[in-house]
Structure formats: C-alpha cells, structure tokens
Image 1: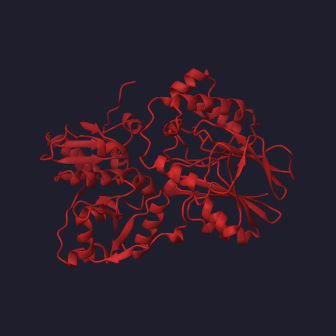
Image 2: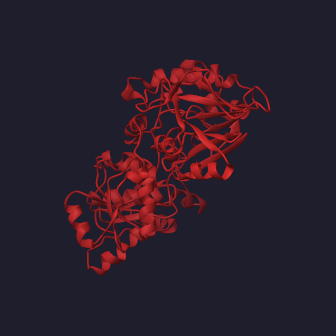
Length: 464
C-alpha cells in the first residue's frame, strides 16, 4: 500500500492519498488539487476515488474539481445529501484501490454524516491497519459537536452520538491500528488537538482526555461546555461543500490597482486587507485596513473576521504574496477579491496618501508601562483557556474571534491601549479592528504572552 499524508499548516488540515496496483484514492482534499494530481503521476497512480469523511466546515474542499480533472468518483456518506454526482455509502460498504480495501464506518457526532475510513491492505492482513478518522477522533481530542445546529441537531444530541461512535466503534479497533485525522493543532474543529499528526488507537485510549472511561451524560456535559464560538464562515463552507465549489481557475484573477482605484473602491465599501507582517503593518498602513498576516493562520482568521460578501483589496509585499493571499482566501470560500495595490505601500506613500501607524512594543516596554502608567489599558485577545492558564496583570479578556461583536464599553478610546496575544499575530489583527473603531493610541505587544513569560515577568492565573 502506498500511503501519504498532505498537511496544510495554515488550516491545520491533513488529507491523504492511498494507492495500490496503479490506482489511488484521495481523502479529504484541500481546494487546490494540483498536488494530488502531480503525486499520482509521480507514483504511477490513477486517481479512481475522491472520498470525503464529512461536509467540512472549516475549508472549501476540492472534491468536485479533482473528480472533474481525473475522472474519479466522489464518495460521501449517504447522510450528506450531496448535490452533485457521487456514490453514497453506508456503514460497512467497501471500495477497492488495487489490493487495498477502504471500508466505511459511520461515526456521527461531529456532524450527522461523519464517517471514518478503515484501510485494509490485503497483502498484509484482512484486518484494518489504519483508520482515517476525519473530524471524529483527533490526536488528543475529538470533534466538537455543535456545528450542525443549522441542520436541526442540538450539540447535546450530537455529543451523545459522538460518544457512541467512539466507544461502540472506534475503540473496538485493535490498539495497533494507526490513527490519521483530518486536522491538527490550531483547528477550530476541536479544543485540545495535539501537535502530532498521527497516533494509534492504543495511545489515544491511554492519553486522550475525551476517551477516558466516563458515563455518556458526563461526556455530553464535557463536550458541550465552554466551546469557543464557531467562526462565522463554518456553516457557509459546509454548504459550499455539499453543493460543490467551482474550480479555482474559474475565479477571476485580482487586478493591479492604483492608489486612486483603491480609494474609489474603499468609498464603495471595499475593505483593505493588509496581509503583511505586524511590524510592516505597524510602520505604515492604509487607515481602516484589516491586518491578517500571511505568516500565521491567515485563512482561518480571514474567514472568521471577514463577511463573505465583502469586496476585498489586498495590500501585500509583492504580487506573488497577493496571489498567495487570494489562493488562501479561496480555501475558506472568500472569493470577492477586487484587486491588489500595485507596488504595495511604497506606491501608496509615493502617491502622497495618508497612512496610520501602530507602535510595536517588546514585553520589557509593556512591563515598564504596567508599572509606570496606571492609565494604560491592556486587552488580551487570546481564547479563554489560554487566558486562564496565565495572563499579564491588569489585562481584560476580549477574544479576537468575538472582538467585532464586543461593545468595548469598558475601554476609553482616548487612553492608550496595549493589545497582547500569544505571540503578536492575533494582537496585530486586533489593533487594526480597534483602529477602525476610533482607537488611536494603540500598542501591539511583539512576542506576546509567551515572550512575557519567558522573560520571567509575573503572570496572573484564574483560580481553580
């Protein structure tokens, strides 16, 4: 059996290729599918099937484009109600890729149509050697059960189904079966996902908190308590995946724009999305722009903070970075890119246009300001769990994912505001959101809470 994991760090997304005797299947493909076609050609494998473990909510999948380009058959659960030609499979069904059998196991809980894929290499054994668990079982966690509300399912009902899928099906597998999930650390489809990208059933049985021996009602309470808000694009992307996304090449290419054209589009309601690093954004940027740097989880945060219908203008280091940003936006279904500022911020400055700045301060300067400036306001934009594990003194929590809806009536726009996260990435995005709401004396803490702790400065923790 040929087996390869493809890992996309920006979305913490894993997809897979399984091959045998000149045939292949691709499981949970990302939207841009060229790498699977290239890998199949390099290995002498014809892609025969494209398999989806469920209707993904956190990214737009490339199943339709991959099938169209290779002639492969799309495989979905019978419960997905996919709106394009596909084979609907049920519990226990199998397909063959050469000498390898893919056996489908219905495992509802993360979503109603979730299924896992057992891989059986007949040349080795008639028993499963690997299981592709989609978003049902992660390394160190399990899938969140609250993403199907729009389809009439409560989080409690889905959590109960997840418990049964885990204990009655996955945990019945041999401890040696290798586990390969669809996501890793950083995905919003779980809460405590490990940095590892594979494991075994035995190790997960031992170390995964969600697989501990507990009654179903206790599991349901645990899985439905304290869930972070789902990003706003999740339900829309799940529907795109049900109906099928257009091919990437069908999307219009962004046009190079002059400063005059940018200003015209801004007056018409376009949002300037600055994808440069925090330091470059802080030095000079177009007033009112949103900073989400390409260096972090760009696509996830763009999908979380930008309404899908918003027309976008990109500001990047160069044209190549603008093209990269467009691709990564398309991976989460943000396709309304009108163009990019030709020449970047240099062109804007040379045209004599006004800019804004955000001061970048190291943790030593933040420590000094905490001690010397009692009027300083500090905002922590991490998730609640991160905040509770340790935060700088005098800080108020306002998670980035909820910042746009937060009234912020506890902040005084006339006073200085320092914004901090784990490392300086999310906090830069937050400063851009605060600037658009009238805050002017803004400081982004470079290095974030991690650097603050490493410097040996005292932090506060929430009491148990």
